[in-house]
Length: 143
Length: 172
Image (cartoon, rainbow over all chains, first blue to last red):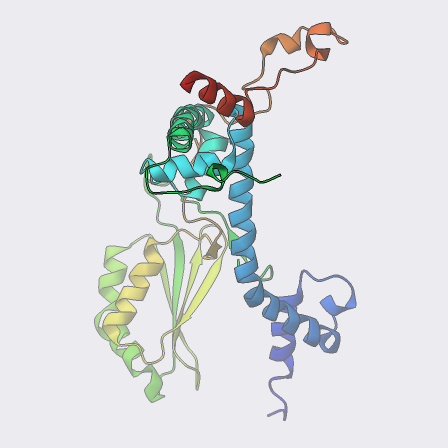
């Protein structure tokens, strides 16, 4: 019985994990020990970064689709959430790529609703101030 | 997804097998066991009591028995696509061995790997996948550049300031 029976299997494991590396660390056991540990560590630490990247990718795709139809991403998302249209970013990005007409109709709806909201907002600003409230504009400036 | 070293593939299914005639993809199955070691007693029990049921149900599968001294029990399945899979049967009851044999019988020889996506579709788009000229004026295809129409300064829309002023003037 050889003393170090695991000698072969340790090397098999390294080769299995490092087959796609570049250079001697692909074939040499000692040189692959560190890089393999690093690659295994990366495979866990990259998870939140991947999620964030994909999230931002979705946002970029939706924004690109919106820009083509003449509405901003922020306005679009705000209108959808206020109108109770429960489409998440994944689905919206997929629609913008694979179902562009549906996305166009969503944008048209969002534009209409957004302009309505704007008018409401401006309407509240232009209303006369209620009694009992003094604003800065009312106080005359002494020259 | 975990690591590029670990094999992964898109979801696929062997749908063509049952279309005409179903062909069992398991070519041969080998039951390996030790004749004396107590670790193989469940396997020996299976061979005595349940193996013939399996062979009668599946006449197209070649069954081998391989006694190996001082080695743990296992089954080796070889498929029509040339792949070979072995499974250890140590500490598995005869009923469980029956189930694993049936599992091997039902498989295509495709390697089991991590899924990249757990869905697959041949037709991802019903309206046509977006391309840069989808919502653009198709007259640009026949236009000769430089064109005065396309070189003209673009009109900007109503700005927020214009809008507020308009509302204010209307109110007055």
